[in-house]
Length: 364
Image (tube, rainbow, N blue to C red):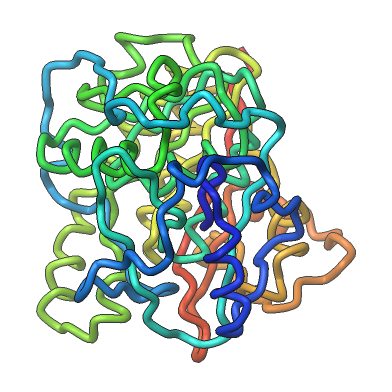
């Protein structure tokens, strides 16, 4: 994912020469004016910090994510950057490049006062941000924000009036702040803040405050151990599944309290577990009568079926399609199940996913 707040012409050329292609059709942000002092040369890769471009990501599943922390907000961006006044805040576009095969691409070192050109992430991680549909001027809450990739994607998509990045765990919060500092100019300090509240209590302390809320919940993280081939890690994740749905439901209820009527909440995980996906959404919808799920099948699954294999989230529903039907099915039950969420299912040769996402609108 390229960073619209710095020059990216050189890295775009490198990506194209190595067989990368644009993930989504969008405006070329490499033409935006920007001082050379704001750019990070593509040669300034940090040795030994290669990251797997499409499959490895940092899990949000640490038990520490659920620990209550006293809440207060603070700015989290870097000291003065030489050319921050030249940042272009016109309508932006999310510019991402993908490769047809798994490969390692070098990450860039954190350099004080300089912005990184790109962020490495699993392509499926962009889908919850796309479903959130952030617009310029929105007030947005990223309830479980660390390590910060989705917060960065939000800032690539739009210029919200406020983006609150919440993370209760101090170590993960430090990493979040460093990520924001590495990609966002200081001129956005008043718009992008870091909070340290317990996410389960956020809806009480800041009720009816936000237009959009993202709950990228702590989960048993099938993505991590699917690609690591670690049986020990897999066993640990399976043990966590017994307790995680309670925490996930608490976070989702809190998010629905934090959003104002008419606003939306996107709930996402990187697990295949129906108890952490479909069941959590269904439980919270039953507890919150003034909410309604929205069907993402035609909005996201069908248009992006060339990149991902999607499945509706219901555990008893066997429809798993790489090429979803262009016409919606007449089956009322199938449509109801799809409204509860969609799931990116990992496939051989495609290292994107798993990723579950569900969008819920608060009606009153």
